[in-house]
Length: 351
Image (cartoon, rainbow, N blue to C red; front, top):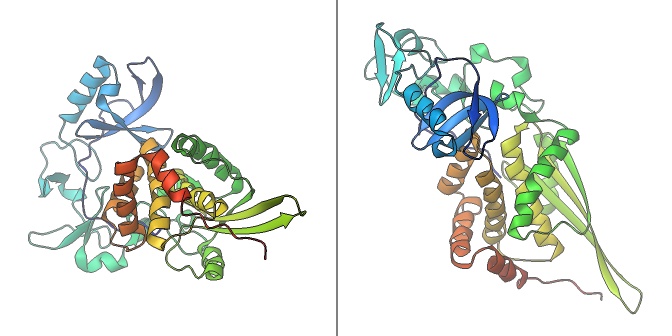
């Protein structure tokens, strides 16, 4: 998967004036402490243990739904999320700001009428001619003020994460194992079986992925890479094939993005163990479909951003290929699509 591009579309956000945490109750009776931070259409954003999740509003009991309605009526600053009172208010499109909050993240000067500006999905604003000086989160595309950047946000390969993505980043194999366990129920539900061979997952810097990618002539801003080797063994009566898979995952990605990338790489393993061959757009498009399925299970705002970028990508392999395979999936469904892919298998034979 490539880097999430910077987007200009915005989501209307609010912030709660009440206690930091509220006990939320679903219609099934499940409870969870969380902070309300966003309402968009029929969905609500709730921050649970420093992670941001999205839920359908009708998932909650009537008193919670009423709380959401009352809460969302309060007019708030799109930048700081505090209540807008009688002080001067600035506007940018449908969004309103405190005068002191309506400032460029680079120069910290207020915006004047008629100026061109760029904005992200998270409420960040910057003068267009200052954007080249701004820092942008490598995962969620949040604009970061260079004045507020801390060393813990700078990864060892030079990438930069916002504080939220940095705190949720997957940096080691132990955390990656948590991601793997999170991914597999979804893959199994699609019909993607567990690998037959050994799988070694490595959490590495970008330079390592780029170097390994040269072995298969792969290029681009890769987030993950899978290398598969196999051996065909015969004793004269029976023939068997053994596999070894190395998955390289870019370190520091937040768990939602990491889940989608790992699912994509496991889809490659499924194809590789069946010696399924096709053009890159079909192969990568298929793997992105598997990645998409994991994102549907996630409830974070980042998952929605990644999904939207997949839909809008103009990459002829990852974008057009994904849309091509998604259309095929809509016709066939998962069981028939997997069967169709299996018919493209071209296993090698002993010479």
